[in-house]
Amino acid sequence: MPIAPPTPLKAGLFARGGAPKVAKPTATGAPPPKAPSGIQIEHRIGIQAPAEVIWGLIYDLGSWAEWNPTYSKAEGDIRIGGRLAMTVTLPGQAPMEIRPTVLEWVPNEQLHWRVSAVGGLIKTTRYIEIEALAEASCIVSNGEYIGGFLGTSLARRMGRSMHRGFTAMNEALKARAEAQARTS
Image (cartoon, rainbow, N blue to C red):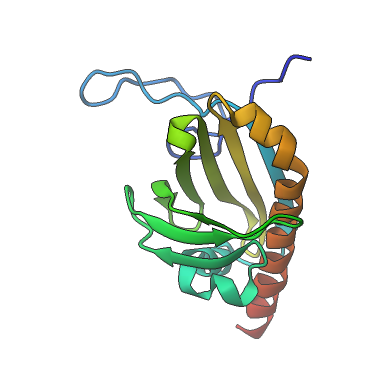
């Protein structure tokens, strides 16, 4: 069964949504980066809170353990090229330690990071994106592209668990952000 091409990401490196963007060469003349390849697993949720409130929760990695059922530990600096240290706890799976590298971040809009495992045979691009619909209404896309030589196998084995983890994270983010928006 052929796999449909992945949905391009919203902003930054991979540019999702809006009018098609014309690919421009980089400053060095090299072609622009391509969207990640692989199998996409994503959960989207509407949140009745301003993008700034949602971003505040995402940016504060140290508080993720308080509200985030999928990441029981998250620390590091959110900066391009920054290394993070995280513990991922997916439903039905043992906790996993990961050390992702931040690819891109835009305040109030997105956080993308990459993980390479098994000597590069598995490569993932993880993203959390906020799309503001109105002043206090957003859609949050929370997902991952899984690629590499063993990526398809990993996606088949863990895809449902990953989707449940993204769903749980989004629901917790929604509850926390909406509660903060009501009190501010």
